[in-house]
Image (cartoon, rainbow, N blue to C red):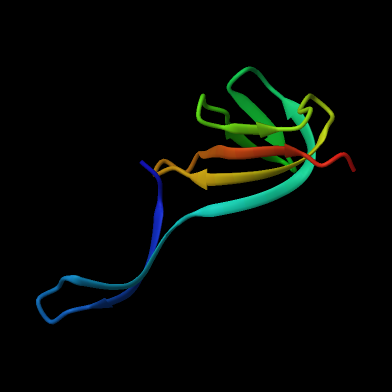
Length: 87
């Protein structure tokens, strides 16, 4: 599962009254360093590539990329989108 951020308050019974819930999402840009088929590095941040990760453009080691990541419960990041920016 993914880590979520919940903003809200506690009821008198101790239940969480969520006012806002969202996934931990991070966007980064930089040069891509592939560390293997399933683990890449951009801007000093390691993340996993899965079969569900969408790749746009010509993405290869050294490419400038824009990456959208979701943080998993264990703190690791998974890429949902990797796009070559051509910069």
